[in-house]
Length: 184
Image (tube, rainbow, N blue to C red; front, side):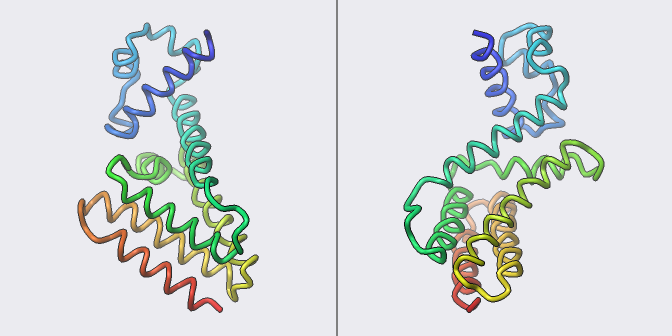
């Protein structure tokens, strides 16, 4: 039962963090929406910061679980193209509210903040995964390609949020395709 309550609180907080923002979501708002006592929240999460860090970890786990689906037996270049396409499709879905990590790094810009440091992990993980696939595909300057693709993905996520119903995703896919094909 304890695990279910913890997961429930995290689910409620995650929804509020994504829809309202982390700083704009108070502990009182979380306990009100969850219909629990504040002491119950603090029984499972020692602080709001711990809850935020757990939210980011949970978001990361779920995101990579979604991205892991698909043909893992394809060649490395196809896997790279598919990873980028899947991320851009996710960004283009109507339910997408921005990457939790980008949102958190904006709300917690202090470089020594645990939330900011955890947020940076997503970017590092994303770039490392892109670089790993680019190297496996034999791409020259694979690390540069990974950075360029990361910029396309993260830029598309912000552009799509700011310019709803724009063609940001289509253009991002076109740019990613050109980058991957031109990196011989």
